[in-house]
Length: 140
Ligand code: UDP
Image 1 (cartoon, rainbow, N blue to C red):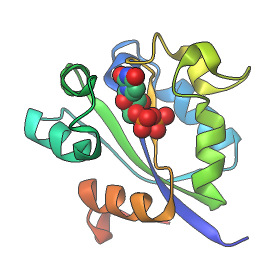
Image 2 (cartoon, rainbow, N blue to C red):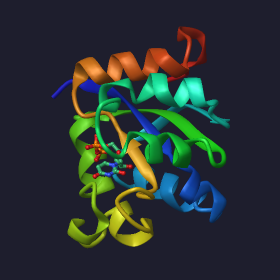
Image 3 (cartoon, rainbow, N blue to C red):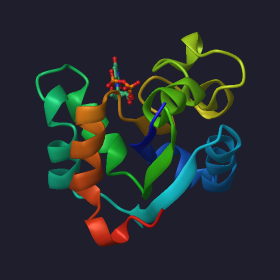
């Protein structure tokens, strides 16, 4: 299996509760390496652009509001099978359905405040990394 990179976010509900270190530790324990990381407070335009794929969904307004309500930590993670591995460590979108030991089971508040984001495929990983980082910021 080739080494992959994926894009991850620690969302405002988690940064506000000072969970950045605990969540990053779970990612690292799963074998993922943080090769880029920065804290951003998204503008409305940045949040709308990042989540443009969801713009016609009923939860879009609430999603943008939540994502602009505090700081987010945007990260690039590297490792074997990183995209799938990150999704496994995150757990299901709705924390009520998340498996034991996952980040969302342990830390998420609700489906809207579910603590983390992770890319779902190689194409989205590449797009999402490029949305937040330039090549010189990725340090493997
Ligand atoms: N979301 C929401 N309500 C829903 C579905 C999604 O608030 O009914 C939010 C939630 O924060 C989720 C994000 O929109 O993480 C993106 O949804 P997606 O289905 O892509 O889930 P994910 O890939 O984050 O598990």
